[in-house]
Image (cartoon, rainbow, N blue to C red):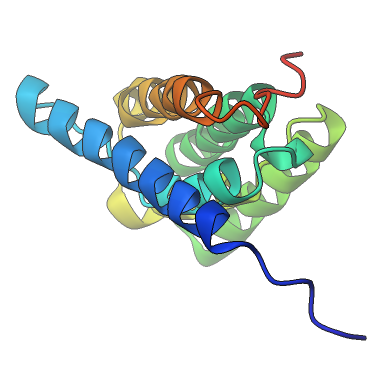
Length: 158
């Protein structure tokens, strides 16, 4: 098996600026409204959105619903089942299964149940940073990726 083909430098720079702009906006808004909008898994979301925008994992449905469902599952296990090593594992496994079943797989969102457990997140974590942050990422991707006439993002919404 050989390595995948090289990516043109122009595409690398375009992806670099996309990630820069998306996280800069989220970081700026976090500071401006004094509410957390940054989620560690958003860095990996930017890799998919700006380097592989045609991937099913990069489509708005997957980004937004994947983050939302995985966080909801993490919060449910954390608050209703308890803080145990096995409940964290069950939360992650359930998030994977639910994303597959709902056709909303977004691999970076798989880390959200673990983030919930590691941070001791409250229910408000579902809205801020998860849902609002994921929506901001998709809006930035929608605006930025379509600057290049070769791109048509998204490939589908629902």
